[in-house]
Figure 1 (tube, each protein chain N blue to C red):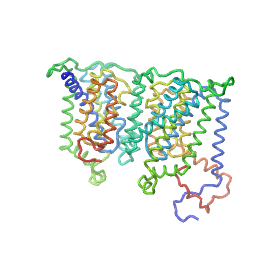
Figure 2 (spheres, rainbow over the protein chains, first blue to last red):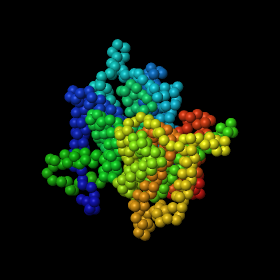
Figure 3 (cartoon, each protein chain N blue to C red):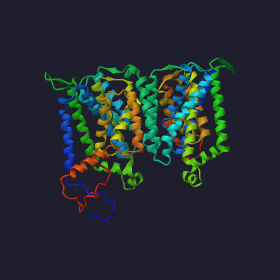
Figure 4 (cartoon, rainbow over the protein chains, first blue to last red):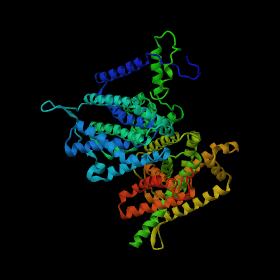
Length: 350
Length: 290
């Protein structure tokens, strides 16, 4: 029995079941999608799932640890370049390139993060924006490695199998299943990470860094680790992008990518597991499917950003939460007033 | 060799006064709002585009184009000041970053949508060379330096003597006290924003004949350079930005002359990072103001 007035309403015992059910229903719908929709819409969905990976990274660093980084696009581009260069110079296959791209992005993030993470608030944002400009300059001017503005073309298609049974992924439905698999794995990894004790430490750093430090959480190490992890997520996404588009050029370091990732996370809902998923489908798949030009899309993103900042600071995820909450209560005869389970967890960390 | 370096330094001072003009606005806006304006370079771009439009499509003279450009940029920033900037008073920093980033996206891409993303040639300005101290310079460059000195002198005067300047200083010191004493903080924020963006637009129009090309994405690089300048000058320190701008300009032109042109734009980033690491309160302030 609750005495305080503002304690949250106890969640219904069926809430986890409803959540899992809805997630599985969405996954099932996605699995059936190639049978129903045409290739152009599949292409839009593939793009949105590629963007889901760096968005998970940004959600981790911004939503759970509270650091606003505009450098996600940089690591996305580094992953794309690393993947393409590995394939071209060493002839390695998709799986190795993919793993290497994520590792390499995390490794690059280490020396960049050590100075950058000494900064806080606006200075950190300015610094990460600076990284974007530097990355553009390097990709354009290090012609020996990156071939400058010409870019790298002919990135190999993903191949699976040995000997005579090699299966090459060329058609969009096959890409769709491959990338859906990767996206689901990444999402599960993200959920596991956020629910682990490390995830709770991140939330502690976001909510009150000084207090977290005083409780013995090594905040500096955690911040650096989160920066590297978010870079790894972005690097994996970049690798998928390189193998899907088969062309990598300095254009991957445009602010366009960082901004798209930012909109996905903010629009979906910061610090919520479902946020990046909702955001990537809403802001990439829908705009791509409506065939909006990149410039118009950026104008729309700008408007959305202003609306989000001033009116919906929590994005779209609360709507989904309200829906699952409603569904979980549908069959119950009377509201559960005597349950004390509600205070655990609180409004954050979902 | 000596002559070459001297020439580079003079060029650097000219580019630097362009940076200083833009950064003065940003540092004043930071002073009153405690928010970095990530869209500042876009007003520079808007002013230049408006002047280009006036010259190309309306066939006005360059002098009229300067006025038209500044007025149009000021009108747009008056609207944005009312809709966006004044709401940022007392808001957490992330809100300021995201809102100004949104404004920057809208402005930049709206211009690209309207006029296309390609480079455009800016026909105008006074580009006849004059010889001063053995260095040949276009009149335009001398004009830029003169305007920068005039603007900074009048900013100094305004901040010390006029009511608006005093209220800007008051707001940048303590917002609550201003509200208690009957200073309309939101209107001060709006006016400071208007002044700052008009200066950025003016700087863009004055440098356009030197840079020749005009394009929609030109504001992005300028925004980053302005960060470096305001951090070097000390956030909120208007006088410091003049020296910091010139310093950045000189180092940039020395690097592009002696090392290579492609490294020019990285100078600003290295300077920004080094300053944030080593002297976050700026080169000229004794202690951190904020």
